[in-house]
Every structure is written in structure tokens, then in C-alpha cells.
Amino acid sequence: MKRPIATLLAGAALLAANLCAAEELSSLRGHAVTDDSDAVINRPTLAVPGGFDVAWEEQPPMIPHPIDKYSIDLRQNGCLKCHSPATYEANRAPVVAESHFFDRDGQRTESVAPRRYFCTQCHAAQAGAMPLVENIFPGR
Image (cartoon, rainbow, N blue to C red; front, side, top):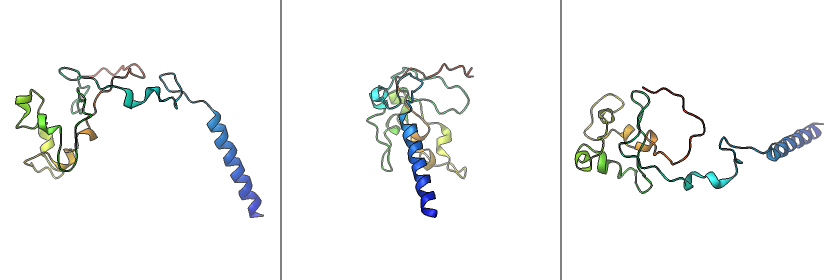
């Protein structure tokens, strides 16, 4: 008795999966979702002199230059070669924010705090892609 019910449920699941696979999905850019012509890998990173404006206080700024060759791991952080307090003036780059030097307990650290060390967990490089939808956010 239980075996026919299990077979029936398995058949229904298979039918539903086939129906979903047959449906054509399209992206907001107007092509099939499975079309790899819009792969992120094919989009160059923008280089924007002066950087991007932020829309609200404490928004992590976008990275206005390519970071493909940067290495950020437990031993080194490529971002700090230009943005550390010791090197930012010579490189004419923004310095790491003061907030990045406080640990989770609010204690000031000598170097970038561990929770802020991996820059790309908050900061992203801007890809050279057209926006999917118009941005109507007024900003600050």
C-alpha cells in the first residue's frame, strides 16, 4: 500500500521538475538566465577618478579601481599597500577609516581589526555593467 503512494509522489515530483525546466526564464536585461553572455567575468571593472559618491552615512564606499590582482588573505592585504595610515599620503589614496581600528569589544587596535581586515566583505569593485533598473534613491 505504501509503495504505490511513494511511486505516485516520485512521479509527481519528476513531472513538476520537467515543467519547471521547460519554462524559459529571462533576466531583467532581457535575455535567458542561462545565457552566459552577461557573465560577471566578462565585465571590466570601472576605474573612476575620485571614486563614487555614497548615498548614506557609513555606507561602505565602492572601490573605484580594478582589484583582480589584489590578494587578501590571513598573511597579506593588498588594499593596505595604498590605504594604510603609513602609505595613503604617498599613494594619494583615502586612508582606512578610523572605525576599522576597533575590535568587537570597542578596544582600539594598532592595526586594522580582524573583523574589518577582509575589505571585500563590505567594499565592492564597481563592474562596468548597465543598471538593471533605474535608481531613484535620493541619496544624501
